[in-house]
Structures are given as structure tokens and as C-alpha cells.
Image 1: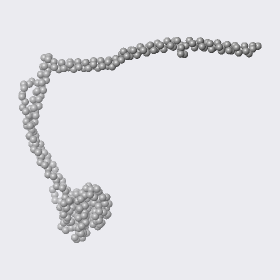
Image 2: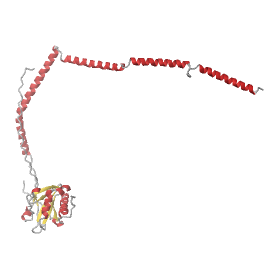
Image 3: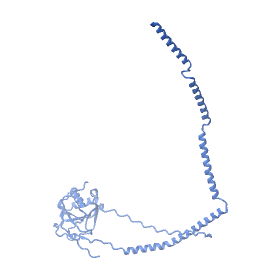
Image 4: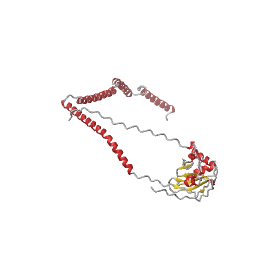
Amino acid sequence: MIPFLDILCSLIGVLVLIIVVLVIAQTQRINGRSPEEIHRAEAHLRMLKVQKTMEDKFAGLAEKLQKLRDIQQERETKQADLERLRDLFGNSAEKQQQNKDSAGKLQSELEMLIIETQGLAQQEPVLKQKIQELAAEIDKLKPPERKEAPVAVNPSGSGLVTGTSVFFVDASGDKLTFFWNEKEKSIVSAVPEVIVADTAFNLFLDSVKKVSQCKIIFLLRDDGMRSYNLGAGWAQSKYGFKVEQIGKLPIPGRGDLDMRLFSRLQLLGNLPMPAAAKPPPEAPTPPKPPMPAAPQAPTPNMAPTQGAPPTPGAAATPVPAQPASAPKP
């Protein structure tokens, strides 16, 4: 049997041999690198230095090439303009003849335009006179406007007490026409905001309310129910008119109202129209300025070139109005 110490010495010798081999291998490397790696690194450094030298030498070459291209393009453009100007202002006989022909043609056209302008200026009064004559003939040929026959308001069967003053309000689709007397009247739009704020209509209701034994009759056209509701409702809610003081009477047609029968029976109310209820006077229309005469064109230097009576409508008996909805103030 091999003694224990012999084995231990053998192991120690093997370990020493391994350490010696490792030390020798490490001594053959510089900074942990082989000689081949060092040679490659040195060659890379030399190439980097050469690249840096080339970049410094040719710095700005691309920018200079672009400027050179721009200068070349500008030179070509100017050269083309120069050639075009040479063609335009050439002194050749052919170019001079072409310019002369063009100038003669333009002069001829200008002279023709001046002659035509003078002819039109001379014909203008004749044409205006003809237009006026044709307009007069058209007016003569127009059919006369058809005016609907007046609608007579008949007081028969109304049951009005003697001494009652009746005031009429014509209610149509978009307005209320209220009569101060037989001749004077005012108009208000059938819009709640307008009825509430209209000075003339409120003066009318206030003045009628002060008349003893007064009555307001709304004459209803075929589209006047909404206007009646607004006007009657405002009279009842604001000025305290009773139901029996407000009536309505359907009126056929669209003709003017004829209230002479009420006037003959002394039933028609008569109030003077206040100044505040009268419409402002219309501004006078300024006269039209006279038509200026057509200017005479200068003469060019010619250069050598190469009913039935109204039928009363049926009237119904005034019916007392029901309380109507008043427009909100």
C-alpha cells in the first residue's frame, strides 16, 4: 500500500505544476490581451486618425457643392432671360416688321372702338325715349287693380242700448286696426310684446274705458281669431273691461269697413286721436338728380391703316266675448 504522505506529496506536486503553467500563460498576455488583439487595436487607432484627417481636410465640401449647383442654375436662368430679351428687342428686319404690324392693328382697333362709343352716345337719347314709350304702353296694358267691395257693418239686431258708444277693432291675421272715429285709425301688430308696449293701442283702450256706456266690437276676419284673443285679453286684464263690454262680429271678405250705418244711428264712438298716437310724418322724397349728358369721345387722329257699386256684406249680431287670454306684460 502507498503511504498517505506519498499521495499527499503527489497532489502537492501536481498543484504546483498547474500553478506554474498558469503563471507562464499569464506572463505571455499584456493587460489580459493577446498580441493579436493588441495589433488589431493599434491598426484601428491608426484608421481613426486617418479618417479624422480626411474629415478635417474635406470639411464643408458638400455645402460648397450645393452653392455651386445653385449658382449654375441661376446662371442658366439669366442666360435664358437674356436670350428672350434679345429676341424681343432684336434689330432684325423681320422683328421690326412684326412690331409695326402689331402696332397698326392695335391702332385700327382703337379707332373702331372710339367710333362705336360715339355712335352709342348719339343713340342713347333715342333709346331712352323708346324705353319710356314702351314703359307707358306697358302701364296702359296692365289690368286695373281689383279692389274688393267695402263691407258694411249693420247694427240691426245688435241689441245695443241707446246712448252706447261703439268702438271697432278690425282683427286680421297679423294686425289689429282700431278706429278712433269714422275717419282716423291706428294699426298695431298682433304680437304679444307689441300689444303690451304699443302707445297708441294702450291710449285707445284707456280713452274708451273712460267713456260711459262704451263697447268694443272686434270685427273678425277669417284669420283674426288669434289677434282678437290677444287684443280682447289685454283689454280685460289690463283695463278691466267686462265681458259684456267686448263683442266680436265675423266679417266676410277683405274689403274696407263701412261703418256709416252706426254713425247715422249715433252709435259710433268718436274720440280725437292723441298726438302721441299719430304716426311720424314721412320725410319728403328728394328729387332725382338730372341724368348727366354722355361725354363726347375725342376725335382720334386718323392715321393711315391697313267698376260696379259696392254690395253691403251681411253682418251678424255682435256676440259678447268670452274672457280671452291676455298677453303677458
